[in-house]
Amino acid sequence: MASVVLDTSVLIALFRIDDPHHESAVKATSARNEYSISAITLSEALISPFRINSQSGQKYHQLVSKTLHQIISVDEEIALLGAQIRAENKLSLPDALISATAYTQKAQLWSCDRDLVKSHRGAVLI
View 1 (cartoon, rainbow, N blue to C red):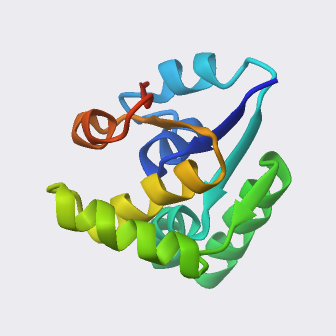
View 2 (view 1 turned 180 degrees about the horizontal axis):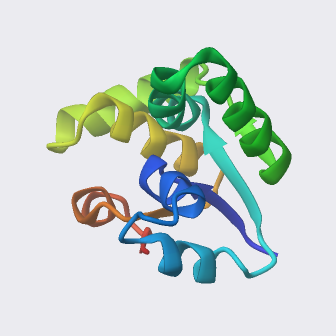
């Protein structure tokens, strides 16, 4: 069983059947792995549900929490590595922190974002 950190693009694709990456995300995550996300991913993924209303945001949060192995907080180690990744690449800070999360967890990173996959050694494009 592999340890996998999902980027926001994969998490959203899993739960939105109208997402262009939905089928590939569902197929990829059908394998028995330990799927985790960064707290940054959680925050990004909750924006749309909370725009609907607070109840939708809370419901989506509960679904994500039950589905995943772990939600990883951003600590000092992740923050420092994220800053270094951001300084060396043309990634947004959230993407750099998600990348840093995968590195610190010694996990594979899965994303639907080609730029993130290109900048993260060993990442998988979904």
